[in-house]
Length: 331
Image (cartoon, helix red, strand yellow):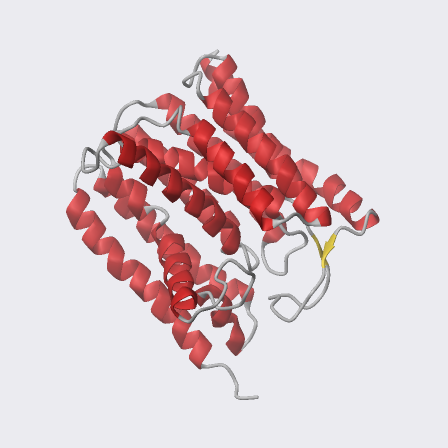
C-alpha cells in the first residue's frame, strides 16, 4: 500500500497534464472565456476553468490517501469542503454570484475545517476561543487573498507549487512525516501540471474554481503546520502572497476604496505596466519563492534567523516589481 500512496503525487501531475487539453477544448466550445476588460492583464479572450482539472486531481489523491490510512481521517472533511467550494466557485465563474453568498460559503468551509486543525495555531499566545476565531479569520482571508493574487500567467502555479514543495520539505524534517508530505506533494503536483498550460502566454486560466479551493487547501496545510509549533515555516512559505495582498488591501482600505472589488493595484499587476511581460514578473516570484522555500526548510530548526532572512527576500521582490512599474512608459 505504501508504494501506491507514494505514487499518487506523480499520478496527479500526469493526470493534470493529460486532462487539461480535453477540458480546454470543451471550454472553448462552450465559450467559457475570460474576456479582457480595463483591469485585465491579458488582451485576448482566454478559456477560464483550469481548476476543473487541477482540483479534482488533487482531491482524488487526498481522498485516496485517507482511504489508504496514510493521513488523518479528518482529511476527508477538508477534501469534501474544498470540493463544495470548487462547485460553488465554478458557478460563480460561469454566471456570477453575490459576494455575500460566496463569503458565507467560504466561512462555512472554514468552520468545518476548524474541526480538523488543532486548536493551537497561535501557540498559547491567545485564549482557546480567541485562537479559534483568529484562525478562522486568517484562513478566510487567506483563501480570498489567494483568489485576488491569481491575476497574471503563472503566478498561482508557482506559488502553490512552492508552498506544496516547501511543506513537504518541512514535513520531512519534522513530525508527523509521510502523510503530510504526500498531501503537500499532491498539491504541488497539481500546480506544476497546471503551470505547463498557464505559463505565459497562458492557454488557460485557473478561474475561481481553482484559486479558491487551492487557497483553502494550502491554508489548511499551513495552519496545521503552525499548530504543531512550526509557525515560522508556515509564515515564510506564503510570505510574498501575504505581503502583496496585505499591503495592497491596506492601502486601498486607507484610501476609502472597496478593497474586495477587482482592481489592478497589486505589486505584481503594476509590474506589468512597463512591457506587459508576464514571464518576467513570474520569474521574480519564482526566484523569491525558491529562496523562501530554502529558508522555510531552515526555519524548522532556526525559526527567528530564517524569518529575519525571509523579510528582505520579500522586500526585494516587491521593490523589483515597483521598479518595473516605475519604468512604465508615459502615455
